[in-house]
Image (cartoon, rainbow, N blue to C red; front, top):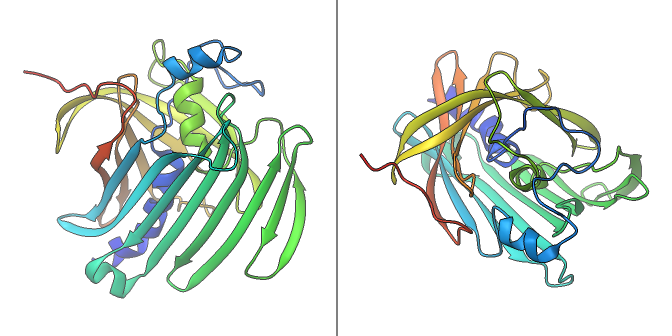
Length: 282
């Protein structure tokens, strides 16, 4: 039980990094890869996998024990009509909170056309380990300006073109890539700015699978992240993510296989979907 709670931190971070990420057959180039014309705002809005009002809630559990919950929500940025304000929150609950308290807030503001972030906020408390950072991105200048509010320090870091943050990656790839022709073993890569460094994030497509959810049977796409040991996840952990095989690309499940079992994050509730949620009817 305690082992599962300790690993809840890694899975909670995984919720924000991994849910919904779906690759294309060829590796992503530095240019923004699209499956529709990004110069036509009306077409982008019609074809987008998500929109304002979309909301997901995930139950994180170790066996039958609920360890915590995480949510993601898309809102309209109040200061910029051409941007989304996406908010994420995760926390441990019940007995899990007594062993390992987690309260994580993540926010990103992204351009509606490119889905590139211009501001990222990370305010976390993980077992007493706290961070409070605001990162402003200048995509044209390829710079990230980091404001560490906890230590009252500011510095700047060079970034590659089209850099993403750990939340915007999810939404960027839901829209950017075409999953119609992928095959098992195909991989993709995107550069993510995480914890003050440029982080190469790779994902491998494992195949298609029909899974049971609390909503019914759903056709899903299955992926595995290729992470560097000692950064976000430990080497012995094996993570798998499932997303719905439809226009929404709804994140359905994340599973971290451990030496003593597994900890999962399952979709528990949702609203405001852009497209119909497709269930398998027997």
